[in-house]
Structures are given as C-alpha cells and as structure tokens.
Image 1 (spheres, rainbow, N blue to C red):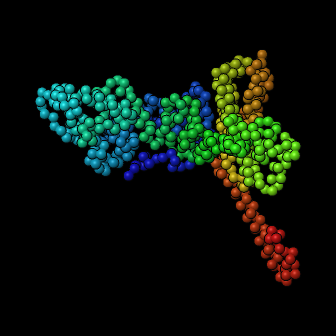
Image 2 (tube, helix red, strand yellow; image 1 turned 90 degrees about the vertical axis):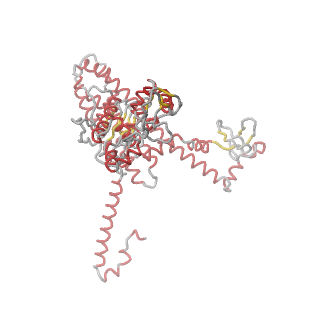
Image 3 (spheres, one colour; image 1 turned 135 degrees about the vertical axis):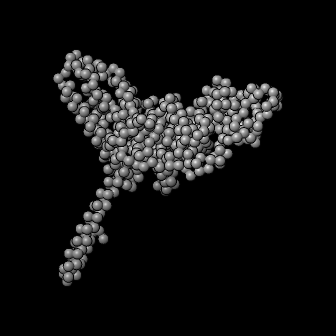
Amino acid sequence: MDSEEDMLDANDMESGEDDFYSGGTDDYNESDDGEPDYGFVEEDADDSAMIAWHRSQKNFCVLKEEDIRRHQMDNIERVSVVLSITEVEASILLRHFHWSVGRVHDEWFADEERVRKTVGILESPVVRLANDNELTCGICFDSHPPEKIASVSCGHPFCTTCWTGYISTTINDGPGCLMLRCPDPSCLAAVGHDMVDKLASEEDKEKYNRYFLRSYIEDNRKMKWCPAPGCDFAIDFAAGSGNYDVSCLCSFSFCWNCTEEAHRPVDCSTVSKWILKNSAESENMNWILANSKPCPRCKRPIEKNQGCMHMTCTPPCKYEFCWLCLGAWMDHGERTGGFYACNRYEVAKQEGQYDETERRREMAKNSLERYTHYYERWASNQTSRQKAMADLQQAQTQNLEKLSDRQCTPESQLKFVLEAWLQIIECRRVLKWTYAYGYYLPDHEHAKRQFFEYLQGEAESGLERLHQCVEKDLGQFLNAESPSKDFNDYRTKLAGLTSVTKNYFENLVKALENGLADVDSHAACSSKSTSSKSTGCSSKTRGKGKGSSRTGGSSRNPDDN
C-alpha cells in the first residue's frame, strides 16, 4: 500500500481559508529539523517576490537548485541510516519509490527480500570472481587484469572501457539511465551513481547529475517545476489550503493544479475551456460564417469589402454573382433592384428560402460578437496588468527615491505607493479572469448574471479610481519643486482607495468561488417567505366557514390563473 505521504496529491488537498484576501495566519517557518519555510520572502526581494508576500500565500515555498540538492541528500541519509544500507543503495530505493521516504520504509519492513529483488539491490554476488591474473569481459570477451574489471553487486565482470561505453550510451538516451541495470541480459542488479562517478566522462556525469536532480521534483507529487520558460526554480506545495495559485521568484504566477497562469477565482475547467477557445479554429470558422458567403460556383468563402452587391470571385473562378441572392449577375439589372438591392432576394426571403441560412449566419455573428466582447476585456486587463508590473518596477528603482527627495519623506513611509501597485496588479489578474467566468455563465440564470455584473462593475470602477490615483495623481508630487502640503492628504486618499478596492475584490472573489450561491439562497428565502404568507392567508380564509364559500371566487391565488 502507498504510505500516507505518498498518497498526498494536490488534486485531493483539503480546502481552507484563502490567501491574498483572507490573510491566512498559518506560518510554515524554517525549523531546526530543516523543514521548508513556506512564508519566505526577503525584505529586499524583487517585485515578483513582493507580490508573493503581499498575497500572504503560506502554502508553498520556492526551491532553488541548492535547496533541491539539500532535500535530496537529507532523504538519502535518512533512508540510509534507518535501513542500515549505503547511500548509493538508498538513492536507488528512493528513485524506485518516487522519492517517498515513507513508502520506502513501509515496503522495506513489509518484505525486504522482495524489495531487494525488485529494485536490484543484491545482498551477495551472483558471480564469484576467481583470483586469476586476468579476467574475461562479458561484453568484448577480451582478457583484462583485475584492476581493469568492474562490477556491481551481482559480480558480473566487465572491463572499464565497455562499462564507460555502456553508461555513456544509456545516459545519452535520456532519464532512463537512472534505472540502469547490469549489462548482463539475465541480471537485474542496479547500477548506482558511484559507478557513473567512477567510469563516466565529465560531460556524461553532468547529464546524469542533472537527470538525478530533476527526478526529485518530477517524481514527487508535492513538487513541480515552475512552467515559465527558462526558469530552474521548483515549487514545494503544502496541503491545507483551497487556493492553488503560487508565485515563483522568476515573477511568474501559476496554478499548481493545472500549471496554467494563476486564475483565481475561476476554476481550472473554465480556464481550460477559455484557453482552448482562444486558440481553436472554431472562432475562425465562426468569423467566416458570419462575415462571408460561399461562391455559388467554387464554394470558396468570399468577404464583401465594398458597397456594391456585384461580386466577382477570385481567379481562376471569376464567377460574377449577386451578394444578396447568390444568383448570376447577368440575370440582374434595373428590374431586379439595381446595384444596391435585390428584388429576387426579398421575394425569396418572404417565401422562406433563405431563413435557415440567414439564421445560421445571424447566430454565428451574435456568437462572435459575444465572444469578442469578453475576449477584448480579458486581453485589455492582461495588458494593463503587465503595464502595472512595469510601473511597480520603476517605482521601486526610481520613483520612490525621487519622491522621498522631493517630499522630504523617508522611503520607509512611502510603502503605501508600492502597496497600491501590488493591489492593482492582483486586481487586474482577478478582473481579467472574471470575463472568462462571465462568458461561460449560463444566459438563463438571469439573477446570477445580474448579481455577477453588479459585483464586477463595482470592483472594476473601484480599481479604475485606484489606478488613476496612483498612476496620474502621483505625478504632481514627483515633479514638485518643493514639498507639498497636500501630500499627506494624498497619502490618506491612496491608502483609502487601496483598502476599498481590496474590499470590492474580496466580495467578488468570494462570490465567484461560492458559485454565486448567495443568489440561490436569497431566492430560496424569498420563495419560502412567499409560501409562508400564502399558507397563512389560506388558513384565515378557511376559518371563515360559510363566508368562504360565498367569496370563493375572490379568494383564489392570482398565481393560479
């Protein structure tokens, strides 16, 4: 059975209170036993690290290469000490069981002999080498002195030259070299990294060590590489939070669950559909269907780019036809409505000949317009977020120092400017994904859509006020010749807008993550209240006895009509 540690999966993690908006209090600080610090961020970190700090995410930590090697060696040493085996054998065991220390212990103590046989760690050699002056290599069949012969735990003799070639070929084949076995086809003895260090070339040893390092992350269910291009950092994710958004030191934020860019509060399924739609050919086909018509002769789609209804297909077809009725142009003239109308089309439309085609074209056009509406706003907020990140970088490196000089204020008292930029960056990300959420919100759920659009509108208007305040209003204080008496008022205003905007987005995030459940609960309460009132009225009416029969017509519920 898998151990409790090995069964940990990010998809099955329990949900807890959130990060950026709820301000979680759980800290995973560095302890004496070397546990990772899930709340790290250096005081002088860059803007990406500050974003991670500002969002107060305590459920992950970023691992550099030296951190990965340290954790790797710690696991090897633990297994080696507990099982009383060499570190080479411990590393072979850990690789086989996907670096799960708990599972190694469970399997080993349950059936050590079976594990040894499966993994290839033999207690005694299969072949006993004779004390001869020369030994025969099992690959090249040449005789070599004993010092030129090497073997693993099985004892099969091979010369160092053949070993080097065998190891080099396997390493160049890819990460499978980590599960290297004895060259003898009938032997399952494992080849450890000690043989690689002893016999491989420097280039091959570097490749092997890289595979060995990466295996610690790629085989570990609690860790993943940052998906940003060129990034060598890894993320160690801790259980206990329902939020999967993580921020790497390279400034890239992504979702632990699906490895797409961070998309809270929208779920991974919606993001997957949205990204697929943005890249799919279906939108091209919708555009073609909505804005073009097929040539009646060659059937190629043609876009109308001028006012006249006289269309000419491109060579080699060159068919001339009417845009409205798709009939041959030679049959048209003044009697059919001229160049800008077509009587034939109007008559055919009244007879219903074009209803299905026009209906399909109209549906495609409406669908395309709806998608364009949401996509443009999604993309616009992404652009604004990128610009805000650049402005934050400029504020850190230039503007803060300049503002401190102009307003005679210590930089430590100007952190409210950075806080505002960090809030803008986070809110732009959230707002961007709300448009993907809105696109997939069912049209028939009118109450939910109205509530969603209200929350979205309030959040967006608050964000725009904050963005304008920090982007434009700050300029007058940056360019001032002397300290301004209005600067303290500006500080209060900007801090207040930052707080209000955070509250707006807190409400929006919570509502979307709850599936706009407040609308359903409100509707249920309203329905229950209405039902109670109706029941009360009916009881009173029935209590009137004879009078109720004389007024029965007027006592009916109007909703029953």
